[in-house]
Length: 374
Image 1 (spheres, rainbow, N blue to C red):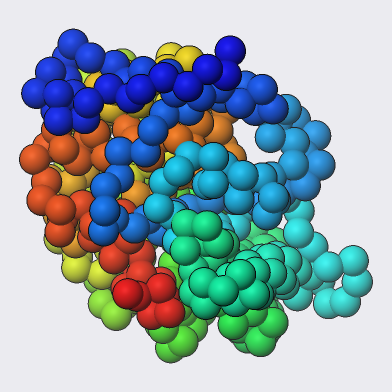
Image 2 (image 1 turned 60 degrees about the vertical axis):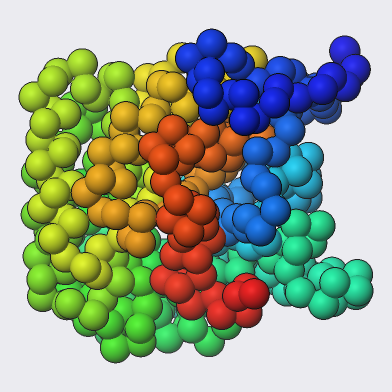
């Protein structure tokens, strides 16, 4: 049924958040997705600070291919004011050069993402907008790629050469995430990893790192090393993904583990060069019972206390919202996801300035996206 209905009055929603759910507005036959009217009013902009891309994935049937067309479709169908996105390395995409030096094969990821970025730049220019707009968002405005840090064959010199090559082939290259969602496997004490961090500092690049995602979550295997890096390299920008790990009902069925998560957030937040992303809670591994019939109000009610904890520790100047699409696309739509973020912010009585920081300005500043400034 594609019949359009009038949206719930949003001011009424804010006064009756426990009673109302946003009405179903539109159903896309193609995506079979729940769509809602965007809750972002005049003056708001969004930079989606975390998404992946891949083609012909063999196991993720909810998004076997997620490339430029798919993310553009999600953004435009949502009606949200997304003006730019940040591409984050996708181990499962297997973006590898078919030939050449083994260490440099990983630089294909930057080449692919930069090509996609250039397509969107040209589209914005030829459309008459002249700049990124929700109609023509700048996809892959920043690129976080990777290298094979786990390989026993990778030398410190290979690390240097690989970072140099990422910089050469992609002007939007902004940093590195290694081991994806398996941060426990990062060889934190190795010479090659220390070489990587030193080089990121020298080139004003970013280190992105997931919290643990394998249950039971072992925060002690990851966060002491993140704190050591923050202390050793105070000018290194470190961005912790997904609120610090695969948090949610599965992880925190043990209340003591939740207390440990909060304690580690507090310890990380001491360091002003550490930022954190709000999102990534909608995957199966987190344990929420979301599906494509779930409204943004319901999503917000389930995740609000987690975001409140993170924002309380880091403040609105070091928190950045992310979609984590298409990983989170399995259980929520782009429309519902960003509306749920907006509802959380309103429920926490965050000012428009605080919200705009977390939805766009912090990402623009941290990822050096000056061309997206108003």
